[in-house]
Structure formats: structure tokens, C-alpha cells
Image (cartoon, rainbow, N blue to C red):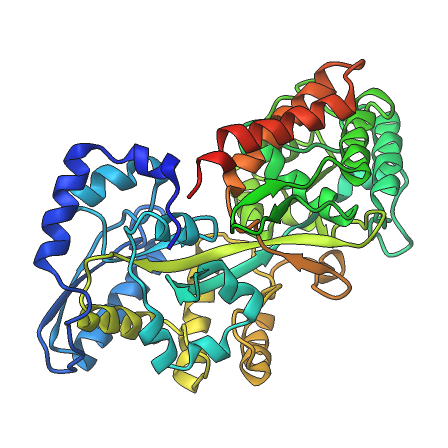
Length: 466
């Protein structure tokens, strides 16, 4: 298993001592599965009663059902799930839950540190290694082993403010926005919107790791390849190419040629979403997961939202997939892992389905409806079982609460992409810096900016990996 020096340096001597005791006390390879074995598990991410009262009540009922099915399992619950900033301290102090939800960005990174459990045996015993979509399964795979169970997935799309499209005269006879089919059309559409309405036509994050994260969708669509594996198993940057120059030139043109960005150009995802939520930008790249925040936090009328596929680049149409998975603590026994998977299965995280599973999904949708969430059909399915997907979609159809003609995002004609295999967050960071350089300086040298980004990634990150 590869270990990153940078991650290793994060761990203090106190952490190492604590982990040594932990791993000595628990031999992960000797624990045996036994349905009658008394085990204890702590479930993280429990719905907060104040903000999710309906879901909290529902999960409490599920917990009672679980206890009746598995009386040998003692269960504790905590509202805390996962936070990169708090993970280390909570792990050392024993406060990290045994099973918890984390975004797709985390499994491989945490697998490299040894802080999460290899659940390969349990995944294979349940047939999940064959039943989960291979592209999604890759997210939790490291060196041929599985380090979590994917539970939900999304792909990036283009979110549009229908009201601003209407004011700019860019809707068809049915009131549907005339979506840009290519990124060049997006720039032209954004320019028209700004000219006609006075507000930003398009915005994209440019700070932290979030700018580079969003830029990947455009770059991949232009044919950019970011990393190349060398003969010794290491990686080197591969993006000093014309395709990358064109991608960064496009970002530069959005600012200096088309002038479609808002006045404040240095924003993270939260800033971009706020500008969209207060109707100061017409189009953003986002996922369906973030749309709820825009509706609830900024009281945005969901009937004036439209979500469609990302435009195509010069080579293809790509979209980054994301989502979440359930991870498990490294010190869990096999019996505890099984108990965690049994809990997740009770929630419907299985390759098959029953009427009881469909009833649970319907109850969850009712809870989402009561909590004011936007409800649409899932864009992506974790499982390859089409009968399961169709049955679940029929349940969703009863609770969809948006104007369906305005929601056309789907995976047809889209190349789905997962994150780069190594140093993804670091890559995003250097790309964000590159984006900032070209939108803050009209005279910036694109080739020099890209060369500097590649050199920084190599020197500061890739050279420090084992």
C-alpha cells in the first residue's frame, strides 16, 4: 500500500503511540464473524432532530427494527459524521464513529493513512463487488481492496436561473432555457445575459481546492490528461499541452474578453452559490446535492431553477462524478464490520430490493418533503440492477416537486470521470492558483502559468509520495 509522506507528517508522535496501542489490542485478521457474537457499534451522521425532525424520527424507528433483528448488537448513535479538520483528534480520542458518511474524495486518502477499515471480504461476501457500478466502485478501491460502501452518487451539471434567461430572451416557446451546448456557446450565452440583465452570466469557484475541482470538467472535455504514471510506479504531470493552454485561455477569456464574471471573482463554492442564490449570476457548475442549499438558505423559487448537462468541450462532454460512502474505523473486528453492513442494508443499501426497501425509500422521501428538500429522480445509480433502479424511480416519481421540463440532466452522451488516482486535492489547489493568475492579470502568460502549476505539483507533492 502506498503511503504519502505528506499525510504521514500530519500524524504526531502522540497519535502514533495511540494507534500502536489500538492496533496491538485488536488483531484485524483474527476476528471471526458470528451472528450471535456480542458486538458494539457507533453509527455516525445521525439526523439532527432540530433541523431534520422527520428523518430523525424515521431513523429512530429503523434503529428499533435493527435491534429486534440483531439483538446481539449494541448500538450507539452520534450526530457527528466526518470532518477532515476534526478527524485526527477524534480518531485518537476514540470519538470517531465506527461507521460514518464521507464524500467520495476521502476513501483513498484515508486508506493511505491506515485509519479506515479494509472491508473487501464483506463486500465480496455480499456480492457488492459485482453489483456496484465499476466507475463508482473505483472511488473506494485502493490496490485492489475496498475501503467503504458507496451509498449515493451525483454528476456535475449546469444550474440555470430561468428568470434571468427569460429576461435575456433565451427561452424557447415552452419556457425552457436555450442551454449552451458547448463551452464556447456558454461564454456567448453568458455575455448576452449580462448585457440584457446587468448581472453575471456565469461564475465558477477560483479559490482553495474548489476552483481546480470545477475546472476539471472543462479541461477533461478539452482532452486534457493531468497525470502520467512512470515505469517506477510514480506519477508526473502531463498537462503542459495545447489542450490545457486552451482551457486556461478559456477561463481568461471569460473574464477579459466576454466579461461575464461577477465583480468579485475570487470565490469558493459557498460564495458562488450565494451569488446564484441572490440572483446575481445566471449559470454555475454544480451538483444536485448543492441545490438544496440554494433553495433553503436563499429562499430561491425551485420552479425557476433549471438543471441540465454540462456543455461539451473541443473533444467530448465530461462530468465529474461525486457522492458519498460509508467508511468504517480501522480497529473494527469482522463482526463489527458485518453489523455495520447489516445496518446499511436495512436502510436499503443493497443490490436487490424488496417492498420493504421501497417503503423505506418512500418514508425517507416523505421526510425530505416535510423538511423542504428539492426532490428529483436520482441522476446516477450505485447499483447495476436495472429492475431495482426502475422500481426506485417509480417511488421518486410520486414525490418529484420541481418542474420536470426544466430538469434534463442525465448521463446520456456524457463521459463520467472520477478524480485523479493520486494527489487530487493538491492538483486542484495548483489549478485554482492558475485560474486566479489569469483572471487577475490580463497580460498573464498562459504557458508560463501552466508550467509553474506543473512544476509546483511535481516538487511539492508528487516528489514527496512513496
